[in-house]
Amino acid sequence: MTVPHDPREPFDLLLKGGRVVDPAAGIDAVRDIAIGDGRIAAVAPDISPADAREVVEVGGRLVLPGLIDTHGHIYQHVTGRFGLNADLVGVRSGVTTVVDQGGPSCMTLPGYRHHVAESSATRCLAFLSAYLVGGLEGHLYSQLYSPDGVDVAATVASARANPDLVRGIKAHAEIGGFARWGIRVIELAADIAHRAELPLYVHFGQLWGLPESGNNGEDADTIIERVIPLLDEGDVLAHPFTRHPGGFVNREGQVHTVIRAALDRGLKVDVGHGSHFSYRLARTALGAGVIPDTLGADMHGYNTHVPAPPGTPEEHPDDENHPFLGQARFSLVQAMSSMLALGLTLNEVVPMVTTNPARMLGLQDELGSLAPGRIADVTVLDDERGAFLLRDNEGTEVATDRLLRPAFCLRAGERFDADSPLLPTPEPVPA
Image 1 (cartoon, rainbow, N blue to C red):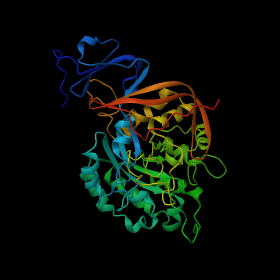
Image 2 (cartoon, rainbow, N blue to C red):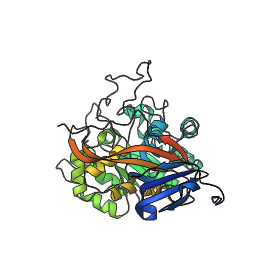
Image 3 (spheres, rainbow, N blue to C red):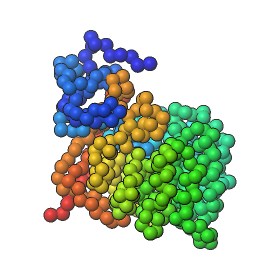
Image 4 (cartoon, rainbow, N blue to C red):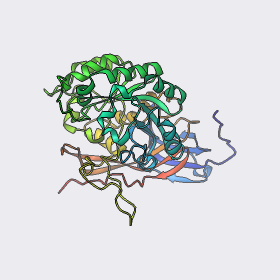
């Protein structure tokens, strides 16, 4: 139950003079935001500083509902070097909610609850893995992900028993898996999601290498056309801009014709930036009218370098078993800058990290808005202008005159500065 702020008491905090962009409330204007008892107390054009115990001037900055990262990998330690620390990805990067995509399974979800969700300042949710092993070592061991490694009844039971954490199901539709087992794993995953009445989030684009026997007659370009008929309204197609075979763009450089029909019947699209992201293919997909609904960062220990504390050795130095380190660094906010650089407007991008993911999670009455009475999850961004260089993992460089950077966030009214060592450093355009 929401407890109204006592008007006789001063607000705990006043964020003054920022550009507030709250799509759920239809606000894009300079506003003040008052926080009291960990909740949004008031949003108004001018709130007196005398009414607050603490005032933070945010003029010239963007003030948004707390950002939601729909594609995280934060089951630290249990998923080996794959899992990142939740708060480094979350509140210390300006993100108040992170959804782990497929790290925990029905067997390991209790550990995720205790060691991640309950011990982190960031709100941590999950799309439960369709596979019993979850995301161990980032799905490197393909032999663990056959149909024999799926237990439909156990996974449905786990999802139903943990609705506060489990907001969907995660599976992979890619050529390595199809060459080994055909479409059966995806059929089982869709059955889990349907029975649990949760969205299914499907990875597209090659993940596992082909088996020694080759592709066994499978064609990466047919996978998406065969999987989409299994999906329902609200299910999520991930990695629309992947540089790998089996994504939205076929080998002829055209967006699959089934995509438009899928979007028209209510399927959703999540960027799932990560190592997959390609500016080249993003331009192709956007040009065909594929506008993502949500914008997961897809940071993990294989594509994000985690600096060791001073005086200690690197936990996972670059080696042949750590294949993605050293590639382009990114974050959820940097992914927002990528969308702006591709020609989308701020008012198209902000819903991808606020209202749309809240709806995807079935939490639109709790997250994604700065409406008075809501939990005070707030993200404050610097909106920098200049000449910056963005780079994807194909080596494509994009020059942009606008770069968003996290300044700080409030999680239930508590302030966290954006000091994560995972955040990328702005790269200026060479003179």
